[in-house]
Length: 406
Image (cartoon, rainbow, N blue to C red; front, side):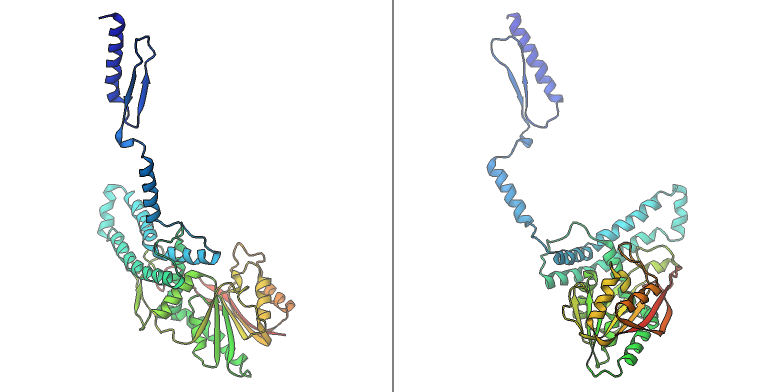
């Protein structure tokens, strides 16, 4: 055997043996640049990673398309609705994430300290919170499903992000508006408004047209509409509130039909361990009075001027980006001599172009054509969607006044 042939055989053996140690990530070609009487190429093939045939590739694309339809173009309104639906339907995922964070922090305790936490029952709260979250999710999934049917979205359609704050706001507002626990809040702020309507519109013939922009979950609108002299329109831009309200009105047949646990992720400021799992049943009264809900922006949904005998703004004017636009629109929508009733704090958002004091708001209103009844002015202390036994009592000093369109 010639020396040249021996060298070739040795190289083949070395390459072949080393191939067992190479990663199997695809075909590998090794060219041996030696002087041999014939070219040598070694292929190491991994059948599992072989590229698919064109037929196979087409089938894969078809499978993906059948599993997940292409997203459709959504208007800004449709996107807002779908974003709220997604947030409700994915509540359980977000709640579990928040509970997991607390459990992870607990796991950071030194091992010898954990029995102390177990002795006071703390470790049981994680399982209890998850069980209550499942109960909440059952109800919220029904709300989301009803909204999908109402607005024509398929179960597969979702937005990329689920906003926890949409659901958190809903839970607080439902307690405030439609539970016995929220009655003390309502009894503080509703009577001055209803009394001002009765006294201020006593000379107006029925039906007296009332508008409530930013009506939340609608309890004040229904309380006003209980008086058959009033024809009540309400406007709301937040679709978290809208879809929850629609479900409440159309899918509730008895008082206290539904139960939720609004505080299961709120472990701060608790007087007792069971406070985390306080349940509230709702609604405490059926929303049977007639209220016409207009979905959309208060500034754009009312093209006709001078429609209303009164406009009631409750915790509303400070959500404006431009307070001049809000007050101008209220003035436009009122009939001559119409009544504006306001109650709320001036909790301006960071987006507000003007962050005015109460005196500045009233001065601005007079410049825009209102006559303020300064004798009507009151400061009314009010909490907002708070837990009854909470160790935190956050109180707004709300400003109440009435004014007339000149």
